[in-house]
Image (tube, rainbow, N blue to C red):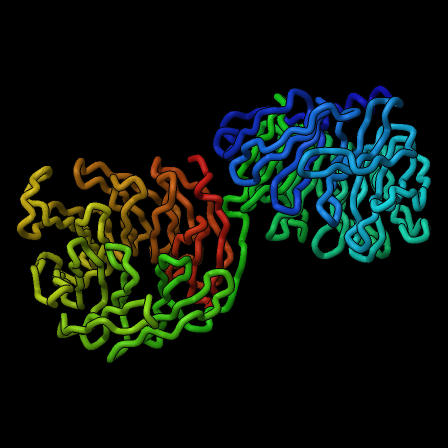
Length: 618
């Protein structure tokens, strides 16, 4: 028994490897002064933690500010659940002195009811979703089922070994894990033992998890993770790769992958279909079971008794896929959270980014639309360029009505950018860029310099203009005068050229810190260029040409390629992650208001990826 206790202590300590801990840590919540044993979520979304320091703490799910402390609990807080009406259900351990369960008011922590009957530490407690009954598992070898309304003990199930974990199954049964390595399936309605699963014969079960498909995942001190069919008791798959370490905790991610924490200092991401490890992290934490935070973040109690929050899902969490029914090839994010998409049918569709539903009538012009842009002043308008060479402006606040339309080019308007002072930049097939005053439709300036079609126009943060062309050149234009710091805003002038790509340039974007122009080429390269210093950073990794680029927070860049992949880069020159999922080339990438990335592909699908970008530390 002493050996088991030692292993159990080691199980919940994952040591630090500084690089991963610093890289993925997005929150550090201090307050507990002893080991953190458990987490739960209130009905309002806020997070509860319980500790050996005999306190319960409630944290704001957004940012982790401490909302409330319920001190002076009767023992170490071993497990927390939330009842169907929102009350807090807590189990305790104070040796043989306190083995109680209490139901607390979540607003003030007052005791609503006390459930007595166990004779040793109550390690785990859950609430059944069907009827709200409380199920508790104890080191006294029993499982007890309670009525939370009156506190009556309904039934006792004797498993004849110390209970370490309990979960509710999809069919109304419950599964319990034991110190002797067994897993038992029970019918809680009549106390019948349905079957016993014997797979962890060498050590104890530390954690149980019900997958979204109804299967069970068990973690153990024997370093194994096993996936079970609870209906017949067969092992579907054994996950090897934890060395000789104890697996402390398992979670299911939103994309179906399994996350595990173990005593070797590693958190691993597994593909349950083939049992292979997809990613391994070295993280400080996992003294407590892992817990899901908001937006795919992961919480765990650290060795220093702090709650650490990590973003471990960069590139792993595909939130949604829906059909590209409207053949949209490029998107822009609108002020109200919806997205505008340019369709191959020559119209602009307004869609809900969550499910791809059309939420407004189509924007149309006199001929097929070939390009569009958002207004520089963030007004409720949209600008489109047509096949017949006209530019059209719509008011999206009053039924997507047309404000005006004017002739701009003899050929199709292939690229557009909205500039300050109500100006619009446009280009056609001849490489000539024209600057227009949208108040009176007058031509302000014609910019000549490119020798082939302009593929991308960028309105920079301070109002200047960048053009990227089939001629392999990026040009920087400004109306602020002929030299840096010259604020004589009389005419548009060419400020700088960049020639570094070996093939034509298809896309360009301004970096998040506004210091770089980042361009992507058909040669597969991405080059970040500082036009003031001529300093460049080259990013290589795609096997085919670059189709789309977007700037991300923390000076990251996302690239979509003809090689069907999306890559996340840091402008320090490193590749952060590659996103796989599309089966044909990427048409466009868009950063949504919540930090998720939307991708559209020639495979006729639209995908939304969670990256936790507004919390990620590069």
